[in-house]
Image (tube, rainbow, N blue to C red; front, side, top):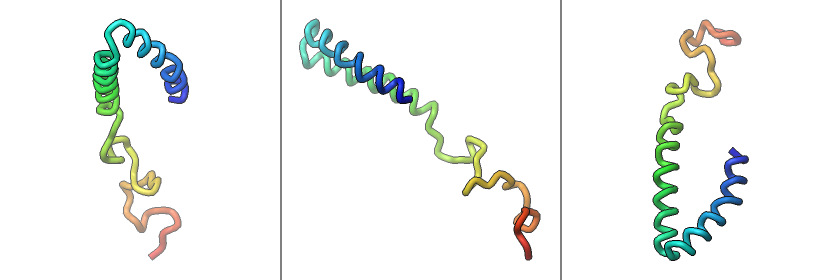
Length: 77
């Protein structure tokens, strides 16, 4: 993830500069804004999960959620 940030920080200004020279600043920034939406929204939609159970996780790092509370190690009645 950090590699992507570094690459983006070095390439986007160059791309933006060339787009401003070619199209003008308004069109260039409108295109860059559309590109951000068209690239980031599908990625976020694919990776964002609302429920930890969708990823096989349980609350508080509980790995044995299928067992009852009394069956867990360390729980006594």
